[in-house]
Length: 463
Image (cartoon, rainbow, N blue to C red; front, side, top):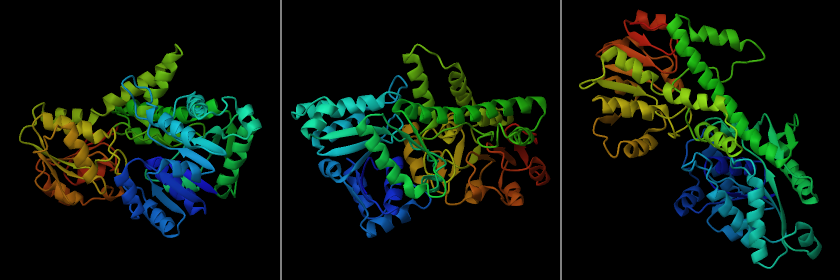
């Protein structure tokens, strides 16, 4: 099948590469000429395990190409996926300017029948707005506004499908190839039914063992995506709040997690205490869902609390450091392990490390930072956060190099390489012999035996 993806960011690139790997002819359209040139050279601008090999292999097989030519992209695809960014605007709502710009471009160039699939995470009702934008451009070209009239006259026509993505950064390729569900939102018109059948055909290779396709109306599909991310964010904030209470009460949040996770009604996923959620999805999607509710005169009180708890959680590590060393940290150096918002990605968007590092520097400390993947992206975003004030941050090549000359270690991201360090070497290297663990990687007794103070989240503090 011929597929066009508008947007070669995280979602668009993974979608395009995996669809090409299933034998489809895929063209990805992006307005960023430098990114297109990089992708056409077989490289990718983001870190995602396995993705670069798929892009390179399918480019070599001529199943995947990248272009800035919008008209050619519209002409190529039987299905046109909109996978551009929807960043939050000043009100907290999702900004649809890029989505609607693609819709207008489709309307300007479309011939024949096209299935337009919204892959971007968008507010409920966006499908209607995309259809209106395409129709407006068709009317400008002299075609009928009414879909039935366009069909009768043999004019260009389309249907808008909602097909939200459910990809975890760091496991996106696996998630796409082995989906736990495929949501398709379509209307009941003849065009909608035609679009649904095309989407079923497209996804058939990914559901051979078990059909995980769920068909619903467009608005329900749009809300499903927001609801899923909001639920996961809620679980994270709940466990973080519970961890803080466990610490006050002398309980161990890890034991509590196992106890409640064993209940099949709850399960173990997203029950780990930590430094708060970040990334490209949860923060903006929770905010956008709250905004959508406010437009209907409804307050989502739970999500307001989720956001408040998450903001506070990003200061928990900093609070532990201040309790140990005081408000003025001048003269102290902290090794920071992990900069990306989660492992197996270089994504620094809303990463807890940004809040921590800015606070430590503001209080006079110096930083020795290491991340297995996100170093270059961290340098870029921290330079922006700190307005260029990077003089007291050293980015080093290994985890143990960060410890050299540091007074204490702060663990922010749970990369696998951090899970089993040489505690004796840490004790020798850290001047103040303290670890602040934002991901509960270690058993307190093991750290204590090494002669180190240990400050995890919601567990026994070793001082």
